[in-house]
Length: 549
Image (cartoon, rainbow, N blue to C red):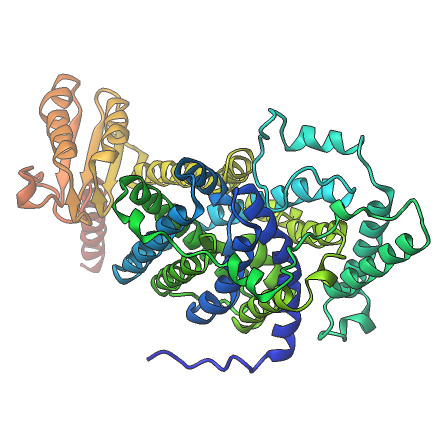
């Protein structure tokens, strides 16, 4: 039975965190819509639906849904190919239905197979992306759109070379506001009397101070004044009819277009995988260690995408940047996500002009701190201390998430983890030990509970290294399954190579089904050493009897 959650139990902290997420999400929604070649309001619509509808239906307490940078290339290509945004919305509508079906088919369970070090590598990689992408905005260079995660730019430059371009476009007013915002944000977490003001998030204070400073610069005619192009740019409808014209519905006649279905399936698969990855990441960030039903999440995302398409919004996923900002701001429940969605809705209806005064430099500073917390040095140290089998997949995921994209980076990390698991299983398929014995070397090979064909190469190599004139005991007493390939290998070793090289092979514990005859003088766990011990005890007993008489 599902426990009923009181959404208003932590309203104070959830309102504060929801406000922070709203400030972070607003420029991201607009930037991703712009990069996707879609109407700007389509990003806001997706953010509103992701916050209110998906936030309510989801069982995740931390994750926040909205338009995702990982889908921008798919959306831009689709809109360009279709030549009409309403046709693209039909693909989003179908994608939502597919996600809904995946949820009922319990496809969300695949998230249980994402290794922890890969998820942490993904988070650290996204943290580094945030820092690289937001530093130019902090210096007043806003050539790149908000929400961009691509390492390689369209002009051939990359995120590192882009940082050098910043030196040519430094806006001193933006730098001043960024530094002041940074001081406020750090002080809010460090200074004791400021930490008590939990209802007022540091990000909000930084935004208010940023607006006030820039308005002062503008009113005094200072050269530090930040120009309009470096502020939040939210569309301002001038009438209710103009607002209604923003809402675009899908072209249902396009349902017979095969290309619409191809795009729909692509969006459904990519959005679902990104959501599952982000949900796993959000659950790991949750200080209360609550776990999300990923099948419910897929259904919530499906409903969200269906509604978003009907209102003219972009497709959505659970998003790490907003989720981590939510967690860092102290969110206690999913009420924070819902509040952020409500604030997005109110902002476009009531105060768009005020929001357009927010300097992008202030929001960049907020995101840079979010990125640092995702990629903090302590995480690297943690996986380094766990050894190379944990550290290498972590770093590989991080590097490829930064250099390519989230899905490719995670895929590589999982592949490397699987290789390490297989390698570990190869080694654990048997234990191998050599002991000195009076008549020569006695080599013990104790097979594990399961020995598959993957272990064939390792066992073959071990048997090939056994020297001539040795004694070998192969023990399968604890084994439940042995692959035929391995049985044939043992049989060939005993009947051919062992005979040629005078190697005495004794088998024990092999089941009748294996068709390998156990050595008659060894039963169960009895070894050659056992007979030596028994003989020794018999001699001791005889000597004791002689002394009594």
